Image (tube, rainbow, N blue to C red; front, top):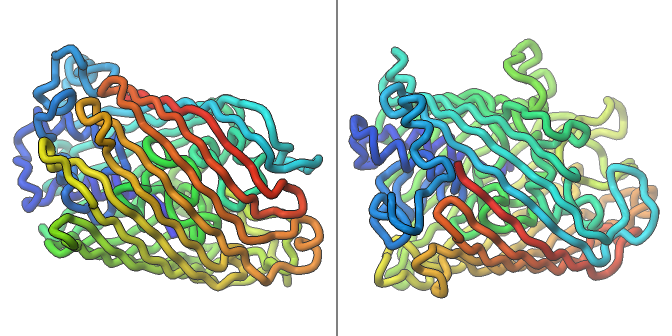
Length: 481
């Protein structure tokens, strides 16, 4: 499904809820943490989990982080410090700026081992890709709107080599997924507005949202494996469930409702299936291509006296999609509808579930710890090229870097390919089950800079054109401003 980052969506909306315990008039600390949360979307979920701090709540005064660290040797949480506040008076005006720049340098051994047509390419080599996001959050109440209303505007761009090594690996799930975003392969350096999203609390238990948003971080999110690939895992399979990501537009119009509760929460949404990455506010053809409907329920758990969560959800798509029996190209990121005709199908579904469970919380900082995560899904198998999916692993804050706030993750995934590919795609690509393992260690060099070594082993899903084993290795650097 949507994968993804309604994080900022509901991060914004839950800011306004009385139950968060954040004083709405306390502009100082709350606004600073908004910027921090923009930089760390994996900690924000559509339905937030304990023991992560409530979105926009004041962060704890821990060594090297939080308000107590301001002005000390370890530095501020952003490259720019409080420059936006000083230059633009954002705390008083109701506008908060933030963003980040992420650099990916990755190499590939193995993968596609023969000449192929673009956008795919032969494996091997070491390449660079960069990605930037620029965020502005507007407090609509200060502009004459309803109480606690918010507007998120986000622009994104990429530069370097589009996709990094993802299009060379021969796998269903891109190995360096964020290097494919936004999905505009011919527009290096061009910023696109991928989010223009309104959120409005109606009560402490109900919040509505609507507008344009990107697909990442919205649903099926785990504390230890989620976000958009700039702070945790980079393989799409360990960011969110690929069963629905492969068939989703990246930026789209959507509307829905979220209900956060003490026991967990629930959410429902509808979305226009047309990819609006390059559009701004064009409403003339809204829902002309069909409709996508989804819902999720999340429940908090407390096994072994430690926090966790379990969630279940589903997505139903009614739009024209490629019939796998007639596919001449392998599945990939991004989404463009096929030409109408007998080689298309109209309806598809994905059902999914997932969990997080803390194994250890640090005694000196109970808001940090590490634990287990897992996901599973099943789909129709045609037009969805992934029939079922499994993943599991460990992640969270590292016991080795408590002062800095280092994080780590190791995960395994299995992608069950559909058995309904026709003779032509079978001859061209020989789709098969794929799997992989990814490890990363995120070193928090300063509060505004983290550097992350990453390694992956994968068994590519395109058996006819790729090796049986491929290795991805590289480093990621992420700076918050």
